[in-house]
Image (cartoon, rainbow, N blue to C red; front, side, top):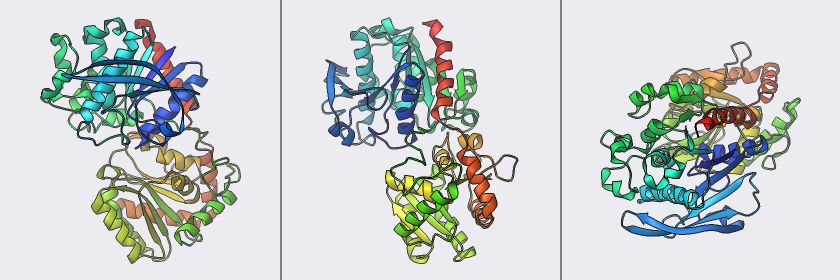
Length: 474
């Protein structure tokens, strides 16, 4: 079975968030299970492309409105990522370093989708499944079905995965001419709230859509930034599949980015080695419980609550706890969190930005990882934390519900709270401090966490079964 994954991100080629981790791992595990899975990305002028060799396997030109553009398909030579990697290169449009935030972003992703379909059509390929990830490639299912240019592929099964339903990629009808000729009898499928909405269009047109956790599928009918009714009426086409993690990259026993190996059967020694290295780097005492936050500093992640919550906790538990923050985002939140460095110099540190190596060390060395998210479709951070024996402190939402059980419940191993507010965060930090004092229980939870299987092997099986259910319609 031939599967093409289309996305805006893929680790390690270009990463902004969890989307990249999924697209960089799922195809590898699918190939190991016997599929032919490949990834197609926009070209980004970044380190991975600069340091690896590619062949141009196809080139042509087409129109974006009245603008003619040349495009090339680049293929990575060695399949070093565990799957075929293709990049779509368009001079002046898809040849830049950043993934998002360019003023012509809509044009970029429309051209990306059209170039992919042109390549597949003109090269006479017949993939079994085209798997689209998020709104950046949400027009593919519609164009396959309702543009005569791609009639040969009209029966190709499509799957659409929603990694974050808050972002739709919507744009006005003034850009309608960027699309190729389509059957106007079906143009209404493009529309939502008076504009062209790629996310809504994909949900309407795709054979099956998935979300990155079962709980998030249910939540979209109540919270999806204006698409709640659509998700309610289309819910029968949806399936929630929890993301996995790449257990080769995230392996506490062999990870080259951490200070020393952590044995899942005897984790205490390895955890302490990493905690000492982490605390030495930031001037913190390894004798105290260390609570960390890793992520984007945005409202969605509850980051706006952190300055006050951390202030209250550090005052209430003066000298009893250390807090380490790694992230970037809203500038006011960045400033407020940075200011705490001066107020609590012995117990609090902030690193503004993102550092992959440091993130690995934090997962390995911290005692607890805080995730007070308002929205969390799946969450990977808590899965990384579990893999490295770090207790997740999470708000019950989305995939956090599906992956973390409170240690007070039977078989539990995390700390859970119900509301994304300051009081619940402060109370949960207090619970973490009390848990830390019970060394025997903490070590038991550590072993329990590290024995859990959140690998892509399990999730990939579910996707493969989904594909098999769709291929008879081709």
